[in-house]
Length: 83
Image 1 (cartoon, one colour):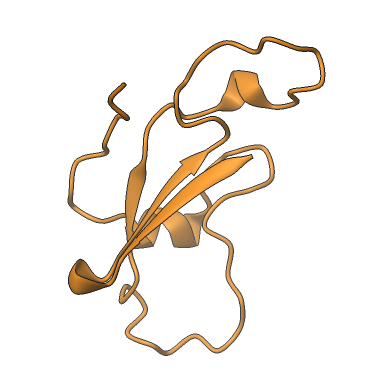
Image 2: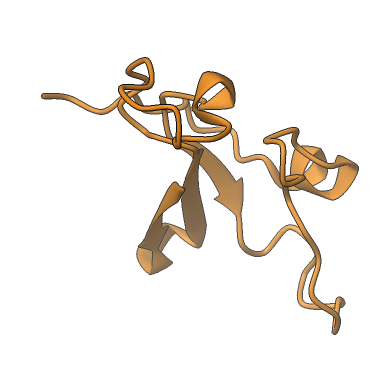
């Protein structure tokens, strides 16, 4: 589970690993929810200036941000969902 928001006007990709609400799991079938970020983190879509041609991951399947993801993390502050 994850949530994504594209913000083309700012060239940002906002990503929340796991459940963006950050709530504890209600059922045993919600794997990795304990690793959920509970917030959206912005990534700069232009961080590699279009030089990459292959698909590159910004996180691992366990929610760790990769070195490429760290290099592309945008300066904007991470956003926590409201509601």
